[in-house]
Image (tube, rainbow, N blue to C red; front, side, top):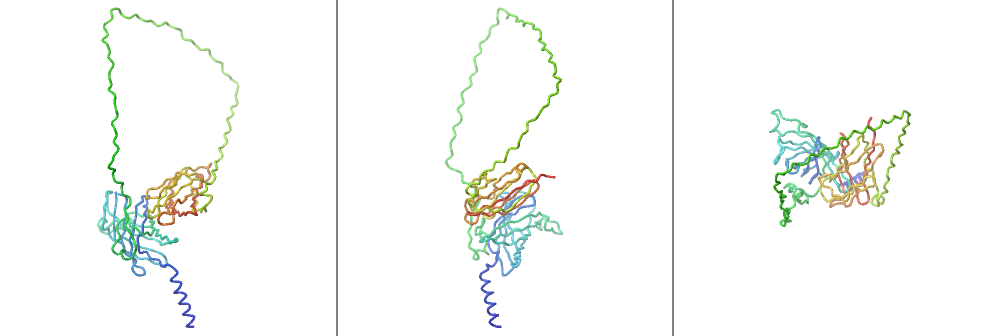
Length: 370
């Protein structure tokens, strides 16, 4: 009996070393999307204390118009991979948008794909106490939306003191404007020719008055009246055959790689807009995009500014395929992107992953509106 218990305990101990422990300690970067469709950059710096408790700070920013930093507290439940954390108060704010500040309550789920770790979920906003009513605000009064974060080893700000001895991280500076060039190209002013007015001689008064010119009177020509043809004619309209859909052969980069179907969308609008962002840290991911095997975006780098593809939809076309091809894997493989699909009032978010062996395919089908 003792040997059986000892063997089971040793197997359990060995297995625990093989399974990587989930830990949210570190730097997480990505976006949150408001209910109105605005994108804000978001960064967490989190320290997990013990089994569940977690503390940290959050940075949210919208270019030069808004920047905020807040302290946070929460807990991470490993069994359910649930991470709940909320902001306590803002400690730094710079805003040109006006109005009060909000604090966020995040409800996130942890997931792992290979070496990549993600936090995805939703948030509720509440006006900070100094801006809310005396009775206090409620979560959701200051908006709500979705959150997408990826664990990284760089920060756009500085590593917080509570993380300096816990992780290996470095500070990077992004979105810096280029320095002004010292040698500016001199542009010569345009050469304009002087405008001279023509010299008009003084006309003396004529001695003799000019002759009077009389026009000859001509009778109007009345055209003959044409007789109407009363015979009935049968007018036949030419039959226009629909043009056959041009099928473009697949290029080698699609033909020689595995093409994985990620999502199928059925839409009822004439135009679909697809926007592609880098999903997390800007690490140099570069992609090419093909629409029905036709190249529409060539070797474009994924950033926080979207790459836009417009797809016309109709009964004649039936369906379209959008293929994302990884030109490189960036500094943090694999090549990941966030796809936002806008079809009329509908809006969808899809996370895309592609490698040098596998392309990602999204298919769009048209359904005539009822």
